[in-house]
Each structure stands twice: as C-alpha cells, then as structure tokens.
Length: 432
Figure 1 (cartoon, rainbow, N blue to C red):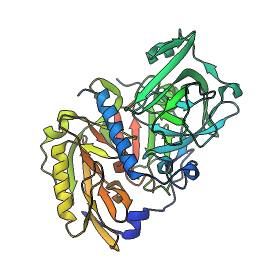
Figure 2 (figure 1 turned 180 degrees about the vertical axis):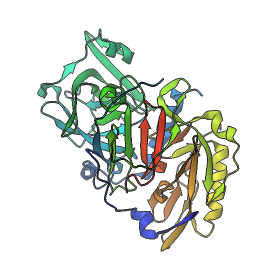
Figure 3 (figure 1 turned 45 degrees about the horizontal axis):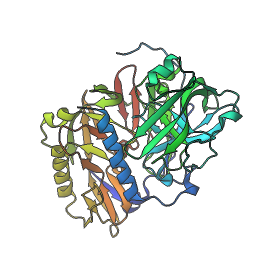
C-alpha cells in the first residue's frame, strides 16, 4: 500500500488531462471557469478570494437550514450529461447544459445536491436578471410552456411565497446574497437527444440576483418532492451519479438512472437524514487517515454535529477537533516544503513554484459501512497559483456544527446517489 503519492509540478498546476469515460447517454460536467465551459469566454479570470467567500456564505446557508423510507422503484432508463467545472464563470461549482422548451433552447445550469427547485432566468425579467452567457429563456417562444395554477398539489408543496392571481409563485433565498423569485411552471426538459421529460416543474425566474456567475440557473438534486430526482422517480428510480473532473480542462458527467457501464467497484455507505433538514444528503464520517496513519479523533467528534455531502460547497468543513489533527499530520508530512501566506479560511498553504515533483501524503476518509475513500491528489489542494497551493479543508466553529463534505474532495470519484435505496456510493476513477 502506498501512503504517499509523488506528483509532478505540472500535475499539481494543470491537473490530469485524460479522456473522459464513455457513457451510455451522458450530460457533460464542466467547471464553470474551465476552457470547456460554454461560459468561459465571457468571464473575467477566476478570483479565488471571491470563490472562498462565496463558499463561506454557502456554508452559513446550509447550516442555517439544519439544527443539529424508501420507494421500491424499478426504472431502467438512463440519461447521462457531460459535466464541467464552472470556474470560468465565477463559481467553484459544476455545470451541465440542458435543453428547455419547444423548440429547445440550451441552458447551462449549476447542479446542486443541496437545492430542490430547478430554475432558470426568464424573460421579460420583470424584477431583474443578472448577465448570463446564453440568451435568457423566453417562455412566450415555447409551445410547451405552461404556468402552474394555484390550486395544485405542486403549488401547495412549495409553501412559498404563494400566488399572483391564479398563478403559482416560487421564491428561494440562498445564503445571504443570492435569490430567485418568479413563476412556477411546467416545460419540456431535454437531457440528451433521446431523453426528455414532459411537464417538468421548474422556476421561471423574474427577479434573480447573486452568486450564479454567468450560468442560466440551477438544477436541484436534493431529496425533496419538487427536485428533479423526485419528479423523474418513475423513469430513473431516484438514482443519479456524477463525476467531477479533476481540473477545468477535463470533463466529467451527471447521469440519471442506473447505467450498466458504471464503475463496478463502487462502495456504499448509508445515507442519513439531517435533523430538521431532510433535503440534504447526510453521511457518517468515522475517521481520517493521513499517510497511512489513522488520526486519533474520538468518534463523538464526527457524530456530534453530523455531516452532509454537498456538490455546491467547495471546501470541506470539519469539526475543529478533527481539522486540527488533520492539519498537524499534514504539515508534519509536508515539512520539507516552503509554506506560503494563508488565504481566507485556508491556513495551510505551500509555495511549490520551485519544485519539480511534490510528494503528498495520501488522505483517506472512512465512512460508515466500511467505505474508505482515498482522495485524488487534486482533491487535497485548492490551487491559487504555483506559489500558493492550500490544503482544501477548513474548520467549523464548533464540533457540534454540521460538517460538509465538499466538491474538491469529490473530484474524480464516481459519486452515486441511490436515494431510493438510502445509500451513497464512492467509486474511484469515475473520470479524469
């Protein structure tokens, strides 16, 4: 067993450039700020400080939502989309491009396991719309668009904010800086050339502002009655998976349904419910290993606040007791390298600008059910530049705060959400 990995200087800075795995029918995942992103040409270079501060507001929002049964579905269809980094458009999140309406219009959306409603900005933007890379969706030009009326079950499930005349409205506030308000409607959603969903319920946003970069909106993947997971339950069996690429120049995927070609070596840990916040996917972290040595962290440190896995948080948040042990072990293993100034929330940074190869200790997360996830080298660092490469973990204020397993640590894993089966899977080498 190798407990350390030697990686070349080029690898740390440019990451892997391998071909993405071929999938049955797939949505491409790209980083919002990557050269593969349809949004990249419109954006200013990524401001790393902004990404970290956005991440702080995301974590506050998640933690404010929580205070610290399974359907037997037989579905065989799959739809898989290319997924990419959204780093070129001002966010540390990942995006896919879907088609909406008849005739369909392509829209690039962030996908988010912590949100329920799928929404996009809509003309005529009666409140305000931020600048997005694609043309804003115009419902008056689609033959399949319809508003949801007030007296429907769907509208009553929203519970917010009510109605305008007989038309159902929705409103979402994210963190302290982002919001979308508009009409709740149905439309034809095209995932792939062969997979479309008729009468898909979504938010047609008329007043939108905040930290969405130049994406057109968001796909809600949470465990909630109005999320795409629930709306497509009969078709895809409340089963989806994704792989977040290791770098902005690589491509991953977001797949709905069980794909026969999926990674065979997926290990599953039970999904749990977070108290008073059922939309999040709860997981049980049992321990952390650095360079082959299990850190001596009492199990109660992880269990007191619990944890969720989240595709929309960049930096993993750990109980301070656990973070302190991780930082000490990591700094000790990296003692031969020159440290660099800290960043907001990141206190362990290195200057690798003069190094040709870097040896990094293997970090392994152990989850309930005997699942051990060995992090990809790209899942350990948040890279600002060659002279500032930071350990991509941060402490919560107290051990009792909700922990969050973020998207940096999920890079290159096939992450499988078997929501109907109540389990979460990790498979290595899901994409490059």
